[in-house]
Image (cartoon, rainbow, N blue to C red; front, side, top):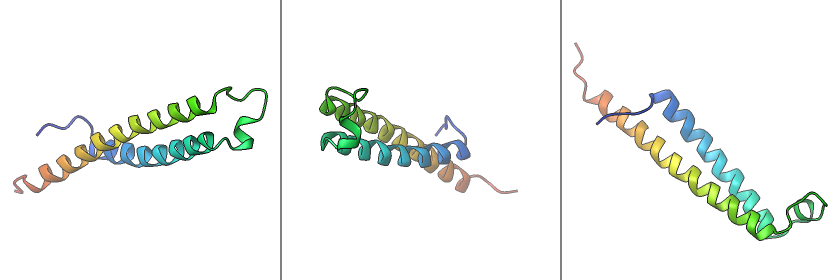
Length: 86
């Protein structure tokens, strides 16, 4: 099977995606709960529920990247095991 990214890039993308998912979920739950620090200032979003929904949607995009990069890492691992060593 063909790979699109190198093993190092796949691992880096996977790690960054995990942290991105966690951060965006935390922000989404905080906006959904209308945490005062995030919703009570003049420059803060008028609709915290819409902001929470946007954070959750972005977390789904990061989850897709995580799935793709994890599959790339598995393909690299599979291909390296099946190569003939001289």
